Length: 499
Image 1 (cartoon, rainbow, N blue to C red):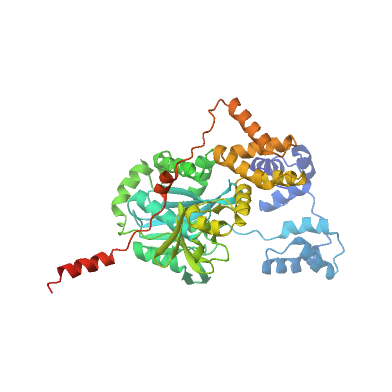
Image 2 (image 1 turned 60 degrees about the horizontal axis):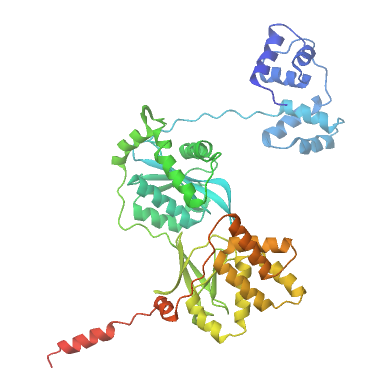
């Protein structure tokens, strides 16, 4: 069992100053006599009192010592089987206790303090901070942390995953915040930095090499299982976990990153600098900033580019969601170009569709205009599209439709009525209204509408107004394909021709 240092000190004092027996010490301190014996043995002091009796394990001690010297992590249960095959008659529980007294203790390793010059080095790593619930998606909350080794200036930014694009975006955010970068960046052996490693032979991630070449710094991985070589960023992650993230509330990822930025430039920058305690981190960074490498122009592109295949339906799957494309692009291979806010589907240099990026799961993000003609051609699909849109926005509506179908109701009319309520009240309100209607066992749009009206009156909100614009006003928002200008150039050239 584990005991406190104060108890160990009392055991040593009672044994060698007061000359108490092991059993007396164990009784007075409320510990096992084996624990007392172990403390005395580890202290390296001569045994006192009656000489220990011969044990059944004594004939096998030489074999045990040799085996543990060759295999230090060998479990006691496996060692017991090996000793029992050689004739040991004891029980496994007593053997496990005796082996603990003879197991070699690893020697404490000494470390050198690593000093750096201003602007010479920065250390980079990821930190896992739990998970984010975004709709139906559960995403890992990853913190990108980079710290300047001399001034200890911290840059902290959170992402919903640890992909290569977010890894590079974290670098760019730090470089922009500091107005420069260090000459050497230390990395752990993560896949974003090191693809393969055999001893000293290292194969870097090609994307990271291109990024490092663009910004003229040296990427340098630390040795395997040597976290002490990048101890500054390890300590920065623990500091951010304890001083910033613990007990903090936030609305979404953007709010969390805004708070992290304020913390890095505020509380974290006002702490004492370990390299020079007479300075704060802010003052030390002001001195180090002059030694940082200048940023090249333009910045390195960090958009994600993924080749996708369009199936029979005009949608492409990207990051757990479906995004619409023009119907004429079915059965083709396109490219998704994504940044943190939007998703573009391109064919070569032509942008086919642009959507807001969703971090939910199973969402269908559409651009209505290109799909309108397809809906007109597929008359039978209009009903299914309405049901699909309704169940995607409010999954609880599926149960209402099932119960309504069991009563022989007209599902088309119910779906159309619920879609009108969806457009008028929104998905969250409609979800609450459907849940109340199902609780009352009335699967009908009128019950949902009455529930929504009661919720509106309870919160003293004005009634929602559905605005129907004339057709000539709606047509103003219709996307217009611009004309090509080459014919006008040819006409101009023909007019300038002297012949």
